[in-house]
Length: 399
Image 1 (cartoon, helix red, strand yellow):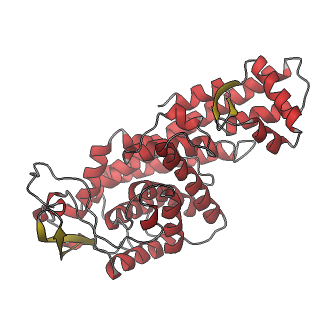
Image 2: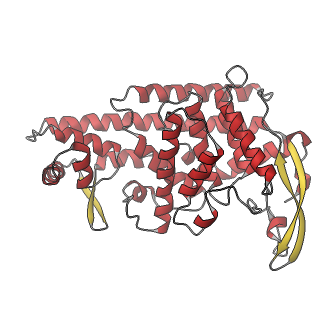
Image 3: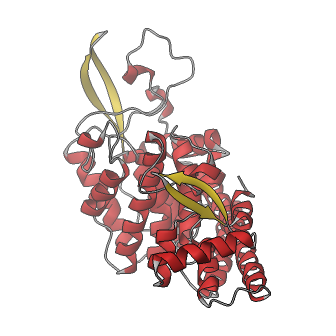
């Protein structure tokens, strides 16, 4: 890490660290410890305030639309799977969105798919916690990170704060003769008491009511920066940090339902995203980062809202198609809603959600396939999976 980059000592301090590299022997370097987040909003430029205000309006419009849905949970699973795919791709775990949307969560086809679907299970746990109005705690974040890493090579080192030094990225021009620490773009807080204290201070800060002093969009952005800079876990920090954005927005009342999908926008601009985060640490440049962050939230909220409206329109169209057919089962409309809320599902899912027998559920699915409303999209562990093609087209529209 180029320690000369850190030109604003008010943002944190460099501390000496040392260790031994298996190939190059002992090394000495420095790591960056950010200061605790302030209780007042940073002084920001007018362009930043305008971006923050636009993000607030976009989030309000998204939330108002979500509140008007006949079922507030209707779009949670589609949103989660799209976010899982994009946030995992940012960290190098990739699977095509179409495959993620239709994957069998009980029997993932690949290790990559299992890790992506871990995100969905983790996210549901956190949403339930916040909706119960429980404060964010270090124990919760450790549990979420452990769930995220289940079944991966790092599972044994997960579910707790890291106990070793980590590095982030590789600086431009780093030669092969450098140790990983020297070649790193950024070296975060060393493990131990300072890391734990930093995380506890961050969670206390998120739990504080900043209404009178800091805009909630700025709260979410500052919390995201601090989490990523502390980099508290062995792996999964990027995914968990972007997930924390939505949790913070929920906790501070900007969202009532976690339908926001933030990572596709950041994924498309990853270099700018990483540069903006680093600029806060090196120069105290909150304006560049918060403007970028607010633009991202506004674009993500607008895209999510448009996708939500399109899915509601598809739902209405499919329900009208059922009503105009010879199919007279009242449960057929429930299966349509199921197909909107779950990008893919099995007959057993229909049986469980509608309360009809397996045989009746199988007949219903077959009838909807005959009407062109559903189609078989694959088999997981020998079980047929179905989806509504028109729903998938909407979900893949922004891919």
